[in-house]
Length: 243
Ligand code: SAM
Picture (cartoon, protein in one colour):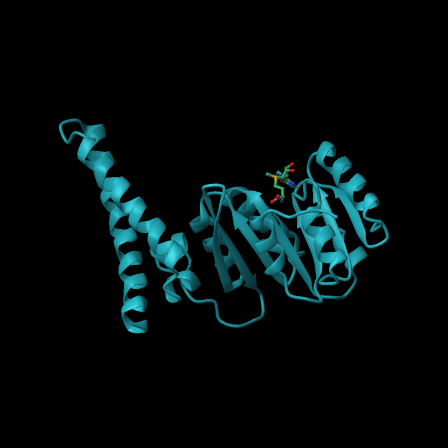
């Protein structure tokens, strides 16, 4: 039986039960296997742009005896014909372990082709603000966010839904750090941001204002600090209200 990392477990647990799953950039296909094996998803499409990972995915699916329920597809981004396999049921697109810009490009292309699914569960490795902006731009409302630490790294998981409800506009702090996590006063996020702010202040002290490059860098760091400070204040306000 496959063993999921804490990160991937958080991703699969964000999928709405009963949805078929489309795991783009599936690599080993562990997410699709876990979801179908545990009866969360009736079927899955696991796709990857590279043949190597797809071969490994096929071997894993076969070893689990799930070849009848999980189809593999070699494709760059969302496979055009995935509904041929999932039928009319609601679909959750999983995008995990890629950067937010690549995920946004994949979502943008699928939107242009009119093949976006009902729900997207994503876990960007970087540029979360680009991804959250892209989700909002395509009518996806963030319905939940999780944050976790594993092997010294921090990961965020975002569940979003195109359910026709209004999509709130995001402030820069919300786009970067997550509207749900900020509203919940998430303690791990607060800890992360306090560390990040201290690091930025330390870097700022080492940059010289004397050069044009240095003063530009200071401006960037000050912009970043202002956004982090706003986020910290929001998180602390929730804590104050709780105690
Ligand atoms: N999703 C898995 C996870 O989170 O553990 C695997 C992440 S792995 C780091 C990223 C995978 O995305 C690779 O297997 C890579 O080949 C695939 N990938 C990158 N760009 C892609 C694209 N445009 N379309 C489909 N797959 C892509």
